Image (cartoon, rainbow, N blue to C red):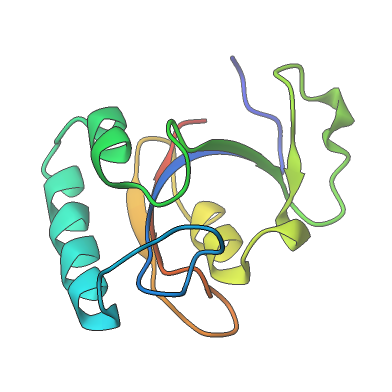
Amino acid sequence: SKSQAGVVKVQHILIGFQGSVPRKDIKRTMAESEALAKELLAKAKEGADFGAMVSAHTDDSAPGIYVMSDNGVDALLYPDGEVFKRSEMAKSFGDVAFQLNVGEIGMADYNVLNSPFGWHIIKRLE
């Protein structure tokens, strides 16, 4: 389906660490999580099956697909269901998602203010 200006569809893998994701019992340390996120990012960029990686690793829920509208864009026109406002998402998640071209993969690094849940490996689908 054709993407609208100001609307992106992304799939992501969240790699959290102990205490970073509410209601998830994650044992990894912050350092272990960063190492895993960088390893998964490299594999994803080499063409590994992204959906399978989400299922195997995400600390969000699979398939981890979100449609996001840019700030100020009316997303009610989007036909495929629930749309999140960019302002509702972790800031770095939105910043990376809107910089990617379709098919491209990037990462939002853990940041206590802008990406508090951990590392987001993000693939733009539309």
